Amino acid sequence: MNKILNYSFPDDLKSMDSERLEELAGEIREFLIDSVSLTGGHLASNLGAVELTIALHKVFDCYKDRIIWDVGHQSYVHKILTGRASEFNTLRQIGGLSGFPKQSESDADVFDTGHASNSISLAAGLAAARDLAGEDYSVISVIGDGALTGGLAFEGLNNLGVMKTKAIVIVNDNGMSISRNTGGIAAHLGNLRMSSRYEHAKDTVRSALNMIPVVGTGIAKGISDIKNSVKYALSSDSAVFESFGFKYIGPIDGHSIDVLVSTLESARQIDGPVLIHAVTTKGKGYSFAEEEPGKFHGIGRFDKHTGKAVQQEPGYSNAFGRHLTELALKDSRICAVYAAMEEGTGLTLFKETFPERAFDAGIAEEHAVTFAAGLAKGGLRPFVTVYSTFLQRAYDEIIEDVCIQKLPVVFAIDRAGCVGRDGETHHGIFDISYLSHMPGMTVLAPRDFAELYEMMEYALTLDGPAAIRYPRGGQKVLPEEFGVYSIEAGRAQKLISGSDVEIWACGNMVYDAFEVFKILDSRGIRAGVVNARFISPVDAVTLEETDGRVKLIVTMEDNILKGGFGSQISALAKKTQVLSFGWPDRFIEHGSVDELKRKYGLDSESVAERIIDKLEGK
Image 1 (tube, one colour):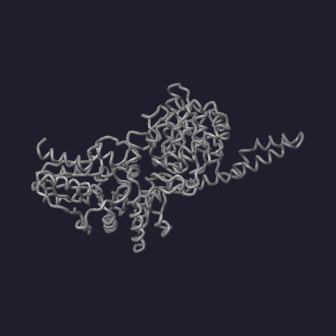
Image 2 (image 1 turned 45 degrees about the vertical axis):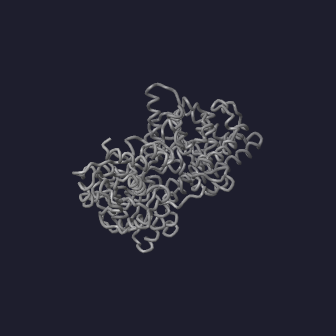
Image 3 (image 1 turned 60 degrees about the vertical axis):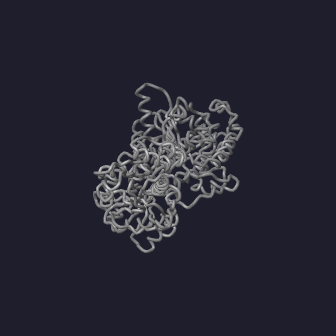
């Protein structure tokens, strides 16, 4: 680890020869494994991009040229090579380095990325701005083959190709998103990888011919002259990117710094858009990550010697996947649709049990939702299983193709609420707001696993769409006397009766509300707790019974306040003042969930004190 800390990057990199660059790659891998084992983070993707990142910084000026990292989870090496290695002990900690590119950290970070498939469109816009301003810098998009499955990537390719401006798109092809890639683009890139056998055979033949006196060189030159036609004859798939208007180079070895540097130097001289296809191995150089790249895509702290993660309790994702499999054993209509996140959303068991009923749409949430609408229209009961932050991309399709059609699609919204260390781009704190105003959409939030199971079964009884939002990580469990789970249509669950305050809490915030109750009770305040269950439509019957009976109604939600659950309660309560707790109207930075709750006054102690102040008129 100390070797990396002794460098002065990026300047030291520029003077290194090929041999030193190869040594540097090994040192960076060692540094990454040491650092991420202590902080957690995206390891496998960064290990696979070491040589590619070194080559980019060798050829380009990271402060003048524009390097755009699609998603950005593979930018750790870029951070190291731009002088941030000494801060890696703060990676993903509150106030520390982000796990994604961040303009506030460095001028070398061009864009705050976090979602997939946008880098080519960004490159096209930057290139157009450069040309209009008469400036001279290179624009490079680094996109993974997984992100290339997203529709936005193809919209960018379609536009950039016809612009005929200078720009470089690098496809970092490791055959993976988080799970292994599926679909047409994965098959296409696989065919291109196979065509590299032709390149190897051609080089062998050329070398042999060059050894033939006099005529050998001429024959070899002739072979070089017909390179494209022969290549297309053997692998016509390679012409696809050229049909978009790109000069295609590849596939090349994404772990050979010499090959990468020479390719990038050539590409920067081409007067037009270039696409470089670099083949890499996710998790390269760390056997555990190479064997299980999905596990090491995003991982918490782990033992670097064994590859074993620090023990974590079972999470909502796996609980959901297990129960969905159980339900599907009884109901042949049930199927699952997911966007390249089989493992992340807990669907591994379901896919193994029902491979014909598990549909990977690729990183294409819009397509996934409309595809599910088609399944529902055909008589099936699809569960669209997706992280909250990524479901945002399919807002229009949810309205147009599901809600207006009144189709029984169930949205299983994983990572709802604050997710902690991944920060702004990954917090799922907007879904209550954007789903609740959709006519016909039932939005539910379980307080624990048992209630999640009940809600899944309840959603299957509906004739229209439903969304079940649940948090990252494990459950919090209330005392046994509150273990009543039977879901009554549209009704909240009153856990504790109170006469001074009634706290309406959503999902995982029910446990926090119970902690607030205990604090208030110790201060002589008679508080009640209601498990809202139904976020939309709100249980107006129970609320009407509460309105006017207590001095204060309090709402708690793991969502932004604007347009959230609290705003719905405020609109309905006519006689009682409402005090709402949720995330403020801003993008929330990275840090642990508990730290962020304390910072923004959402921990139990802060909530209780504000309630007391409100009751006392402060």
